[in-house]
Structure formats: structure tokens, C-alpha cells
Image (cartoon, rainbow, N blue to C red; front, side, top):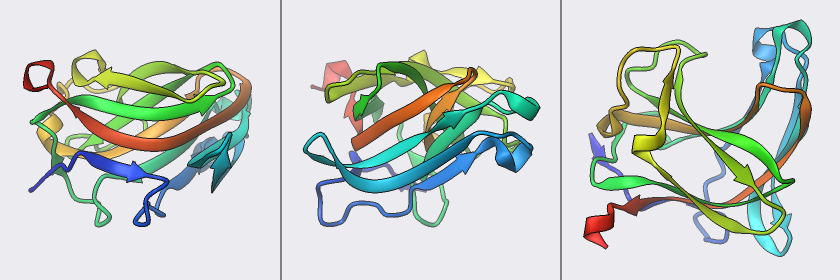
Length: 174
């Protein structure tokens, strides 16, 4: 198992991750649409998700997802307190979804909501604030596999950009 490095993705770095994946509810018959681009947003390099979330045909999500390791393996984030996102959006509520090696079904995840404001903001999401969705196992951050920024659960226009994604230290570690 790999110990999680602090930086997951920095869109301004020469080694920025290019393997973000667009996932829409069409994989389950839904009608939501979206695009995912790596492009400047309000002066910063970013991964930019735009789309329309539709509840038609049992749909309801648009997502940009990233495996924490390019090979899909797990990382041990036990030394970290949570995740920090440098994010900008259209003042809507989005979710951050975590998947671990324990998550086996597509609809399962650990979730935490956040607001993406129209100005670049760093949002800190502590692991203790994530709740399991459709699974009983508690979040085991020593077995993290994937992270997703998700527009979900209601019909709306999604427009959210991430310029940086990293782990942050426990408060008692500075």
C-alpha cells in the first residue's frame, strides 16, 4: 500500500494529472449531460466540469472523478485530517465522494457536501464529516481509492472548477 502524498493534483504544476474522468448518469439510463476540460477558469489553470443534471429516467448526477493512484490502487491517508480543494463554481452545492477498497457498487460512496462560490476558495473537508451512502462500513482512510466532485440529486446547471486537490494535516500536526 502507498502512503498518500500531500498533493493529489495541482492544475498549475507541470505534472498536473490528466486522468480525470467524466461520468454522467447515462451509465444507468439517466439523461444528464456534461463536459470535462482542463482549461483556465477565472485566471487559474483548472479541471472544469460543466453540465446539466437531469432527474429524467431515474438520473441525477454529473461527476468528475480521479483515481488517487493512476493504477487504481489504494492509498493510505491515515496521516491526514481531510481533503482541501481549491474550487470555484456557480454558487451551487456539490458533493465530494470518496471510494475505498471496501466500496464495490457504483452507487456506494462516502459523501460530504460543499458550496462552490463564484470566487476561488479553498474548502477543507475533514474525513470525520463524510457519511456513508448505501453501505454500512465506516470510512477507512487507509484504503482510499478514488475521489469525485459530483453535481447530484436535483435538476440544475453544474459549473465547478478545481485548481488544486490535496490532503491536509491533522490540526495537532500543524
